[in-house]
Image 1 (spheres, rainbow, N blue to C red):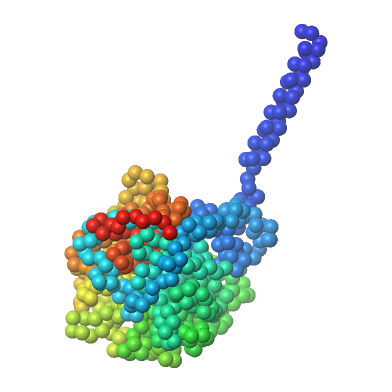
Image 2: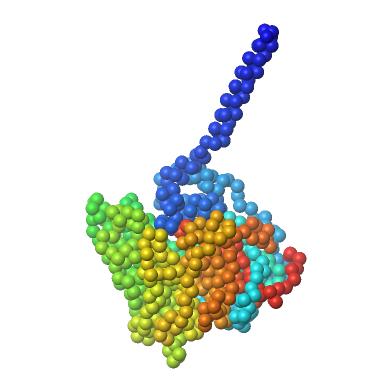
Length: 635
């Protein structure tokens, strides 16, 4: 070979080698782990990779959230204590790893807003859904006249439209409905939407706040005649809005401690707003670094006109040092009895009823796992009924019973009353209180005999995420008790079966039962993780005329004949949907309280990205086929 040719050949080989090395380096750089991944693995994975055990959002759910949601959780919210060891750079890195840096666009709102002539809600008619229980007694029952739906209509329901919300993972908050306006809080979107649901849906106004929202919405009228919407956010602030304009009238913080929460929907009654207060110390107390425990639940009464506190009914006395936990640090108690439920208002007796949760440190107060009757005027606890004694529970102690804060002598069940109390009537016209507990027990109490037991019905052993979870409903004769999956169903056999039970109010006798069955057919096996076991009925059901509608954790909407239990309608929401507002949307677990009806339509919010369940970001509207209205041009 000629010398110059040989030289060129060597040069080509050298350049080729350099190019290969450069390409290899570039590929290595591209494949290098994100710097935030190491932060996640070191500081977050222990909880978020075990969502069913820890109750934390899964990694997939975190990646579907908004940047602002995670930032708030790390700096001010539930993750503040865990994130306190991270630098600002590390926080930024882990957020970037999870959701990137691109801000969530709200451009869709410009296309979804109503035309000017439809932007003012018409609020003269009585509210169809005024709060969690639809009425002050928490019946969760709508007549055919109120809903525009008859029992027979359930057989012919089909999807009328869907609405998506960008970067939402928890469609947990029940809307209020007045006339043709649906007031929907979307928790991690940090917004409450007033949506016109007549004909072609559109958005009338939007209320935005820097803090993620949490509770359902309640509608009412102030003493001066102003129509208002009230709800709470994750920072325990209560918001009162003008329902016509969406303008904030006042915002009042009600948290008793840094770890307080507001979970139950506030109740507006007369000139006061009654706000239940829960807590999330249960999630932190199992950590040896945490000084456990000081937080307890309460109900606060606020002046509806100004938001100023009037009284606070505490579920127990302030915590004080109880004993050395073994390392020179003290256990504080009593603590716990958070109130997750929305109040039932008993105007006749001048009281409200709420249920409480477990203790989080010793000694377990007699107001834990209890029903409380609280005086509407002064906040005095008139009587209490305790269902489960000595239930001291911390989430972290499920995995490590030897933790320094973990109770040594406790039934360790976590069997809250998470389902709001119902004031029902027996056949003889007398009142009875109905209460569902996570123990799997349905209780009937006499309100005129200081909560004396009338009857009880047990549906199994219950569990921290099983039993009767978020709510029950009443049709005038029966109470409907949904049963969630047992927490340890994969490793421990039990008598509890996920599903729905119809129970006679007079006697406690079970009239019919529906047992949920797994469905992993088609794409569901891929879309719905743990589709074989995650089949519980956790959310609060809704009675519509002679039907009862309930959702399941695997994404199905069911409608049953309330008298016979016949399945009238079933729809799979765990899939993608085309939306009228152009936002990509999908459904998931149906949980908490998300099923309402009005104007001839059934509304279901789908998606709940906690406890290892499937997130989602969609509001679905169903209408009987015969009532379909031809689509009109978008506003």
